[in-house]
Amino acid sequence: MRVVSLVPSLTEAVAVTAPGLLVGATDWCTHPAGLDVTRIGGTKNPDVAAITALRPDLVVANEEENRAPDLAALRAAGLDVLVTEVRGLDQAFAELDRVLRACGVPERPDWLAEARTAWARLPPPGAYRTAVVPVWRRPWMVLGHETFAGDLLARLGVVNVYADHPERYPRVPLDELRAAGADLVVLPDEPYRFTADDGPEAFGGLPAALVDGRYLTWYGPSLAQAPAALRAALLRPVPGPS
Image 1 (spheres, rainbow, N blue to C red):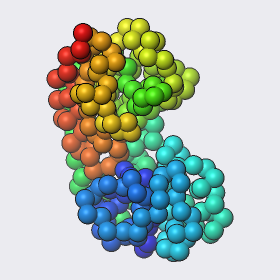
Image 2 (cartoon, rainbow, N blue to C red; image 1 turned 45 degrees about the horizontal axis):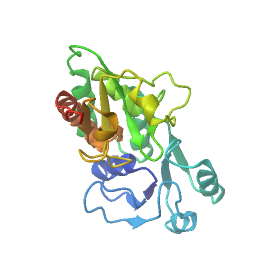
Image 3 (cartoon, helix red, strand yellow; image 1 turned 90 degrees about the horizontal axis):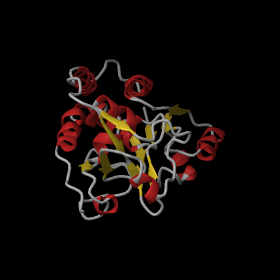
């Protein structure tokens, strides 16, 4: 079977589970390290002609990461396109099962079973904190409602201040973010690369948890390590500059 992946998370999941199936992936597919496949552009601008030339039996995509016109063009070229929807952890597990079955994987891989166990055994939060979770700067954008990352944080005792916002990734002026009454600002290193020197200073004295974006936003093999890694980062926030 020949598979092209348009989603970094799914690229890693397929490559780790069934080496040799992937023939194409996006430029943003960085895991597993050393993946040797044809690169077919970005998640938002895939090269449809290059994908078609690879003659894949299946293209795996995501409704959030990939654009509908590109997926329609792939279908018009006669390709089978499987589009996932991931708005929370349980849905991520179900969609990973679906993708791997579509790729001909006969049994649930060990990493997926380990990920389910790791999240099921997560101890209940001792106390809940509220947070703003920026994902971009210039302009400021934050997690809104029904996001995978927001669901993971909630399971770790961090409630997104903008979880009830009508948009999933709203643009919110910085002065409003500062006045939101959060206990914490959570700063992932993707899609915008927030660092100790780029992000915390915007929020005054608010503690800032710097988290690995792969553990917060990817649904794949990293899910097995994500609970421990995120919990550790959230328990050791960087004191905000005053």
